[in-house]
Length: 141
Image (cartoon, rainbow, N blue to C red):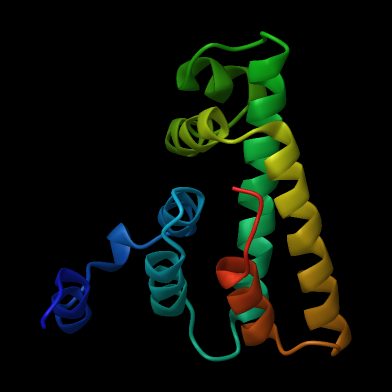
């Protein structure tokens, strides 16, 4: 049986369509397999640490937006861009993801990512394995 995802693997992809935001959006939507495929297309061998860092940066921004949402400081992505000094595209993506996650889920995920990043940087865990664990392990969302 040929599935849609099998066909997608054979098609060339446009690099501008691949981003950490796309991978995180897929991850937070519960589509871990597709998120892992995006991460693997984003990275080149030996760049897993960079991807982990980008994920941490975006998660930090998502948590900032979620906090501002919870305290009533903002109601939409445009306000997030203005109040938090973010690029409008990044603010929109962070706002969309923050709207779907609980603050606890985002914080727990950030703590897990921090642990995996530390393990990868200290040599306790292979960086590619750390990225896979971040994406594929059961998580809080």
